[in-house]
Image (cartoon, rainbow, N blue to C red; front, side):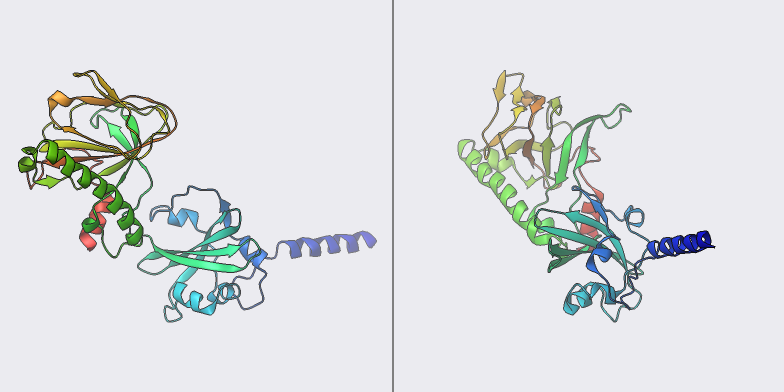
Length: 323
């Protein structure tokens, strides 16, 4: 009989160990148990509308459970009491040296939001932010592909779209951050253009517009740009490149027709005509990361742009339509 008692006791222990954490909030909850339902990940991460369903857990978190660790006023902003159809799902946990971040999916019938709640390492609440996943131009770095009609596409570098401030929707979740970055980069180009006009005053009469879809480029070891002219079948007239850093090897700008090799200092801006005489290339990066911000000025108000799928992203279209 003793063997049966031992087996019964073992089954009882196993049953207790498999008991799931009550996330409804109807019972007291320990924050360590609450944190366990969030999968710990490392940066960088990419959560888009298309993969949100795959990332989030199927467990539901009650507003009462969240309120045990977060002020009521914050819980009300994350999941308002009047929004009875909204559901909270645990997403991810990000650990940092002095704090950690819990990401929750606030699922509404017609939209999804991501709430980020910050705690200290001692589990004290610090801050929160709500991200509307469909209201920002920001995207992860995208591959800049050369020869779009070729099946053997070559990945040259990575890029992010940096629109001018007047093309950023004020409803964008990161409007202020993007405004700050866009202002610095575009103003630097515009200041340099005025100096270019001082040297070549006739050029000013030919410039009617500035290309809208400017890209911040990120070159990594092995990245390069082959010889090319910017004009092609476009209305580009003047090309410019703003250099954001210089702590890399390789990556020189080379003009083969003039045999000029340049590696500008960080903060420098280079201007040159976009025509076939100024064919140029970016030499292969051998070490470090190279950041640059190219731009083009057109001799037409209604610009002729290259047929380039990288020139206009889905994010741009989204904000253009919702402004």
